[in-house]
Image (cartoon, one colour):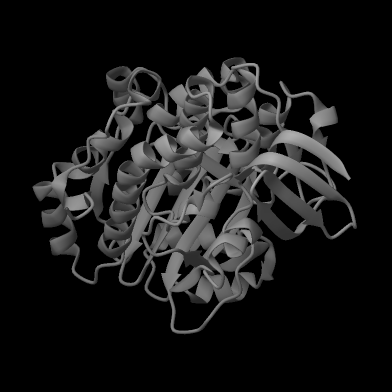
Length: 401
């Protein structure tokens, strides 16, 4: 049996970001990761300016600058007609908010977050089996037979969090009624004109949307989509899919999208799971972050961003409070209203992208001032200056009083 003051369960994006955040304040945490090696499955991670600020503040500025791809921004078309809907100029937004919008390959970002850490504090092959929280600490038991005693635990073990289940019982994420297709192409294998004029195109239409954009400095083209479905689809990043089935999911696609889908030779699929908006983020000596606390649909591109904000702000509270339990309580008090708002925005975006009425989509965008109008409060957040301030959340997305 080993013992430590702070254990982080989960060595993915949220867990490694939290380890870096604590390290900036001289706090050493032991990270326990289920996989035999670091490196999450999945193709891409989007990171908007406020989350880039959080990543820089936890000490990985050089690493992310070296691996991040700067997209000019999504050019949105109607999936059926190919008609232009909206363009969001991310280069202009970078000037406004002071940091770029990056697209990362997920494995590259994991490596970047792992690099500054002492790997003797990262324990691989430790899949959490059970948890025993008691008055003076928490005992973690792993499937490999080992145990660890920790004074305090940060749960970053994802959407199927064992720590969350230990705290709240049968609190599993629910199937959203949507599935995701993912494919990754070498840039030279994809017709460049399909994703012109900016190399980042989104198609929205009845019951589905699809996004294609470059990552790894333009060497790879990431394709990801969401589709409404009545059939339950298993959750998981790497369930092998059938390219013909993927193509058949877009029966009325406009010619550019048809040509793009014709290039897909391998794909993955999974069911999309999320949690209802709630306050079940931890208690006592256990604090949940990232998907373990607030798994959301990816329609605002903020799932990883919220995890990075979590990591930075939790680190600040851990440094500011002598009692980690007090730090956890303050973290939840500050973070919940903002993250709940982002969850509601993600749900609203999800409904908007899958509307049957193309004209209503345009009117909805115009009434909100476009995507930029809907997301200004998200991207304009200043985590370094506002980490301990009550967040600004528009009334449409705020918690009811």
